[in-house]
Structures are given as structure tokens and as C-alpha cells.
Length: 142
Image 1 (cartoon, rainbow, N blue to C red):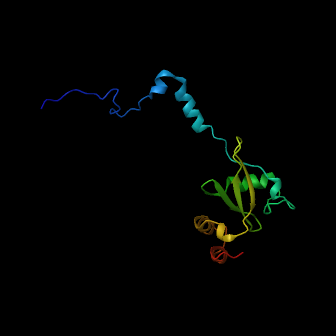
Image 2: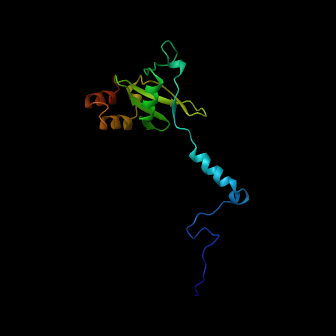
Image 3: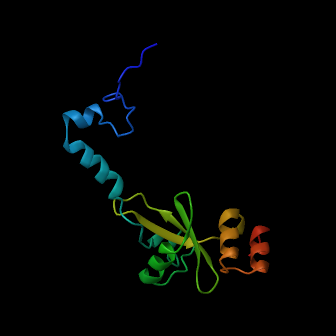
């Protein structure tokens, strides 16, 4: 059996990334693909009127946009939802609005069993809730 000198060039075996056909024909496409991934807007707190007092949704306990943005930025992620706890101990859930601005609105979690166990564990681990609160929420009590 004789050895051949095959560098793998053009075959994707030399360890370097290979251009796709689309990138070969449309050189600007590589940059456009990269920008579409890296240009996602950070989450923005946008209060929803349906969660205002007297609205038809559950209550939003967050008083200011600044407080809402801080809670959203420092929140605990579970899929697309973000959870956090206010200074007075109310657990809030941030829900994406599916807008180009990446807006999220918030509301009070009315059923403690709706809080994912992983979120409760992390809040307890970070000292945001006590062991008693953790056990109470875990059992579905407020």
C-alpha cells in the first residue's frame, strides 16, 4: 500500500473551516450570517397595561422601569422566561413579548408551583430566599 500526499484541501479534513457554496457565490453572506447571530438585542423591560392594577392580567408589582430592567438583567433564566424576586419578596416572572426590540413584560407569580424547581434552588443557593421560603414555595404555598 503506498502513501499518498493528500492535504485534504477542499475536503474539509485539514481542520480549517470550509466556506459554504452560498458563501463562495455571495461573499458578503458570511458577514451577514455572523451579524444576524451576534446582533440580538438585549432584553428590555416593557411594562404591559394588562398587568396594571385594574388590568385583566395578574398584578405587576414592579413600580418603575429602572427597577424592572434591573430585575430582568439579574434574573434567573428558564428557557425564554426570566424569574426574579423583588425587594419585598414577591417573585416575578418576565415573559418575552416577541418584539424586534426584545421586550419583556412582568407579572407576579400567583401559583408558587409554577416556579421551576431549578429556579427555586438557585434563589435559595444565592440567598435570595430562606430555607423556610424555599420549602413553602416548593410545596406550592405562598
